[in-house]
Picture 1 (cartoon, rainbow, N blue to C red):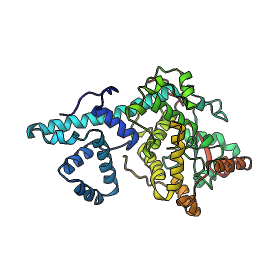
Picture 2 (picture 1 turned 135 degrees about the vertical axis):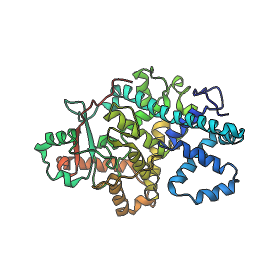
Picture 3 (picture 1 turned 60 degrees about the vertical axis):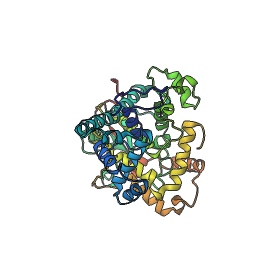
Picture 4 (picture 1 turned 180 degrees about the vertical axis):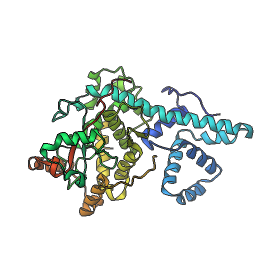
Length: 390
């Protein structure tokens, strides 16, 4: 019978089902259909290794992701599905229902815990000292977009109108257009001709990742958090950390996308997290980021980026399936255009982060009117920037 304890005991080798579910949600697939995973497990349980390999090859891409997630779950508990299938037939339905509940609880509870803890602690972090400052109203959030049709009506004196349009719903941020906090220096050096430069190197992402990986107790002091942000990890912090529980030694592309979702939610809404929350489709947003990190056309850049993340987090180099049919150019389209224009991004040339930083820095002074000319716009959220409730 499925294990029912939802707690993780670091002294015990076996993990509970909710802990396993939470782990795969954070590291491999944020939005995944629990019942589909269970059903696929039942279907493939009698198969040999070769039969499973052949079966996977016939699946469409979305089902391959389900199959891969099932494999990750079974790596943690190899008899999870087998225990259900070997039970007397009169108990199979009840056991399946219990397993679905435990996996679902692990998925949703892990998400809610991460959103709540980050929203509570984020306002005191050094990375939240925005430069330049966000202004008098702390509910300003900045986005990078290439929505030229919307920007034709704007000029430097029309910034208030832009903010009002966002507040009134005339303009909306979409998951296809990445927020500027994903970029190095919060997008201050963003080059619309080279959107890859600095992408997913925002300090707030590293801050949240460090907090999530190394801290499990929200009573940890901000002083301790400050030490963590400088990659000095006290033994007392690491002992019961998620990195230890998950035996985590390197980040996954899915983990980076997960962190991006957590940050975006914490910055923009106080609503309880769901896949579509506050009118924003986090499933699409998550998959857009994963596409960049996992697509072969970005392999060279993604490899260097993952090494950079591992160095920042560990001190060494080491399933929402949705689409949106909306007008406008997405950030992923811009990334595609840059990759096509520069063959070096396809894997034939290594990317130099230092050179990228210097190039962005040299372009800063020539883009004083970037709000008008390069589609960096500002909107004022109708709700507080920071959560005050857990």
